[in-house]
Amino acid sequence: GKMHTRICPTAGSRLKNIFRSLVIFFVVSAVLTTGHAQVNIEKTEGGNTYAMGANVRIAAPVTGDLLAAGGRVSVGQEVGADAAIAGGSIELRAPVRQDVRAAGGTVNIESDIDGELVAAGGTVTLTNKASIARSALLSGGQVIVEGRIGKGAKIYAGTIHISGQIDGNTRLYGREIKLLPGARILGDLSYASPNALSQDQTAQVSGKITREKTPEGWQSRATGKRGFPWFHLLFILSMLTAGALLYFLFPNAVGGAEEVIKKHPAKSFLIGLALLFTIPPAAILLMITIIGIPVAFILLLLYPLCLLLGYLAAAFFIGGKISTAMKQPATLSTGRRMLFLLLALVILAIVGLLPFIGGFIVFFLLVTGLGAWAIWAYTRHRHFRAQPTS
Figure: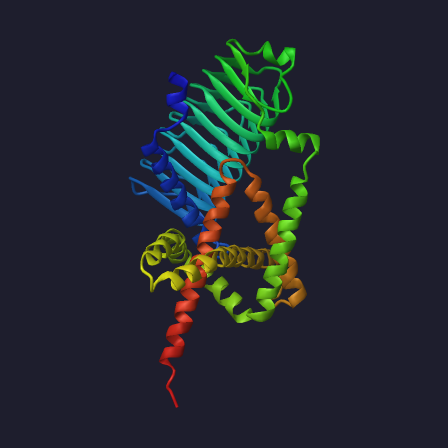
């Protein structure tokens, strides 16, 4: 009933949220190319505020919307409207008068939010100082709720720990769900987990409790009957082999695609998105004509290869960022190059396991890598055409 309409947005608002998320991660990719800039917002001119950098600190009140992205983002002054934040580490320590959208490695909410909260990350924490006036949609590897949520919540996470209060109907989906001492759910509770709630935990729920069917994948991971981790290990090793072969055969092409992502992340993403959704229908249209059938088959055969190249381009780029963060030499040996590629592939695999946001991040990176290859190939083609013929 009412709970469903508050937590689950309509199709139109879903598209709006997806678009907003695209903008956020779009900015994050640009931030990766700006070095280690420190951005301190100590004065605002009124209206909306936009900030990005390796470290972003909001130290002045924002009268309108706030859009911030960076390696570390700290909001220490009131935001008068909506806040959309993305970063490796996010600290929200001041009130936000409307809705909040946050995505990051760690997300800490320590203040009042007068609207809704949508947050995703490796760890999402609502401290005992946090108070959400409306509903909350939370997702991550671990979600901790110590504060108060005013109008129900929906939480997807590997681990869910609740010691605060949730007013309204609540849905929890996690492999480990704990209602700690002091937790109160004032409404109905629906949950899915490999383990049932204990009698002490159910006593903290004022309404009806419904245990939903546990997804098959969760059961298999809990019991160890399926080799899901082995599948990921095999995938990582396969990608490492493909990446090594690609680097040995075309080192300049790999470097070129990385440079395109670094310099033109926005353009790479948009072109990659266009290619992703235009190649299959173009192939189908070509099949309608007899003369276009061979070209259509070539396009369909190349499509998986293009996706593979996009994924590897993103992995090489992330590996390069890791080496820079570790202060490695600009020119790496082949062995070190492959080591950082392996680290990047492991990170991508872990990110892909994150509920709700993980698949989106991997999709974004893959599409950006695909677009980077297209831009590099087009640039090389123009370069060769410009060469004088003998």
